Length: 268
Image (cartoon, rainbow, N blue to C red):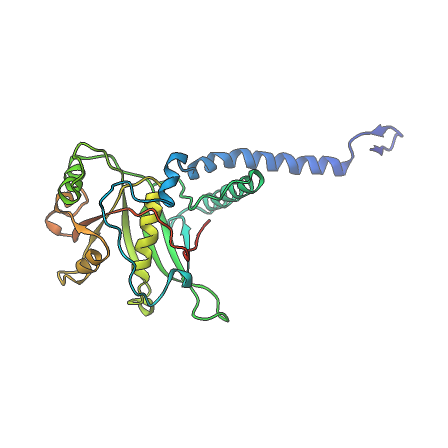
């Protein structure tokens, strides 16, 4: 309470008005950000996939292999795609922080990973050679965050490769590209990335991950994907934009919804 120049008692002073303005602005931001928050929410009935087994029984999971880098060496970060507007990035950060706050207040576990609407995101690998140096980005991997429509060639492929009922609807995500800095190649970063991308797709309710691998005819990249659980899917060549393998071979693998104990994923 304050007394104005005329000696009248005022219940609201200038400081109170300023506080109210700040609170009002914050309220407006919070309300608008809920529109973005909805983009992160994963269907609750699908969340068991991240801690349990793949949906399809009998599909072998990839066994772990000796690695030069372990998950414990890398911090994985989910980021928006290049070209995302600065304002959009701000809303994403605000929305994710609101989710963190809500989980803390309500005593709920944080989501394993959050992907925004828009269809695509980027997974980054950050690594530091020793404790005295800063983390630096050593790799990035583009992937889809929304399932495409179910199509007959996909049903045919999973039936012929995995023996799944061709009438069963499956949900599929895709790896768009994989890039590792030259000095960190052959250090198993790509194998670890496939683990994380498979997990993210499983967590989003995808049954399979597809990609187009182009090794210029050498066969080495194709063999590498096969060693890491992928199968060649000629049924999908045309629908994934590579008829007659002009852009490489289309390959497919079942998602694996198990998080390695030493894996760390950060979002926004």
